[in-house]
Image 1 (cartoon, rainbow, N blue to C red):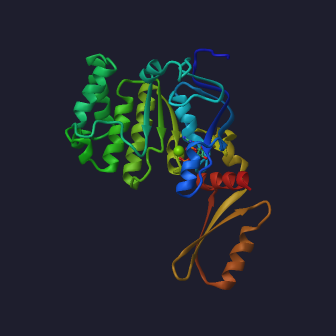
Image 2: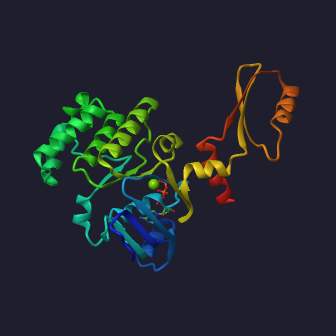
Image 3: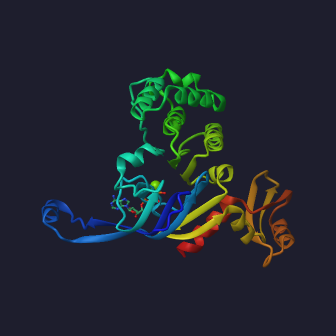
Length: 316
Ligand SMILES: Nc1ncnc2c1ncn2[C@@H]1O[C@H](COP(=O)(O)OP(=O)(O)OP(=O)(O)O)[C@@H](O)[C@H]1O
Ligand SMILES: [Mg+2]
């Protein structure tokens, strides 16, 4: 496979199939399953080709079950592709697992990779030793962390006593600690409140800027995408359906407007309108007949709505 030495990730015609046993009900069924050859094949990732360049933050998006986590597991070397080729930092991940681990950082939103009963700072020191990070690089990294986020309240707390937000913050800091050239973030803001999400986004952006770290991010939160990603890749049912700048996608939906109407009872109603086919004024007049309108706002289409339209279009 062509590799210039510059790409963080190269994937070529990557497929991943899972064989799943067709389960039968009841005790008799379970016994039958023990000896069964009755398998179904699930194609989780189908023929995905893409390149991620150094220093990029890409949003790897798609509806539930699209194959995002499966792709990340292949990139991190946890899973071997059924067919196709992957290079991460120029190496085949599943064949060079130890080496690959040293050059990547990973955060899976729902579970922590840290030592539960240890204060965070002790986890950091263990990671420093594990990855053989020189003391001066380690100190510089902690200083960088201090400049990007207030780490004092969590540094001496055991992970098990942390809130979900603090734990996520800690996980992200831990993933970047050995300064890997690439970090995978699988739904890092899941379950977090608005202000913690903002903090996490700022941190990721700051680390990417300071260290030129490549970030591959999966999320269902379009706020994450707006704050972090210029380029997005969308997959649906395992197949790549979009790969370009987010702006490009918004231009494609350039004639769409979000019309927001505040009705006399104070409630806001929202409509997505294609100006090519519908006149905004017509809609306003029509609504005015039903109820009195107090206020009107017309906005450009949001990332959220663009992505929703893509998902809807592809599943139809
Ligand atoms: N170990 C496995 N065995 C069998 N099927 C699996 C396995 N892991 C994933 N799948 C299936 O592969 C498909 C893709 O799953 P994946 O977890 O990659 O989706 P995802 O895009 O991360 O979704 P979500 O947004 O819900 O996290 C799903 O149909 C899932 O059921
Ligand atoms: Mg997933």
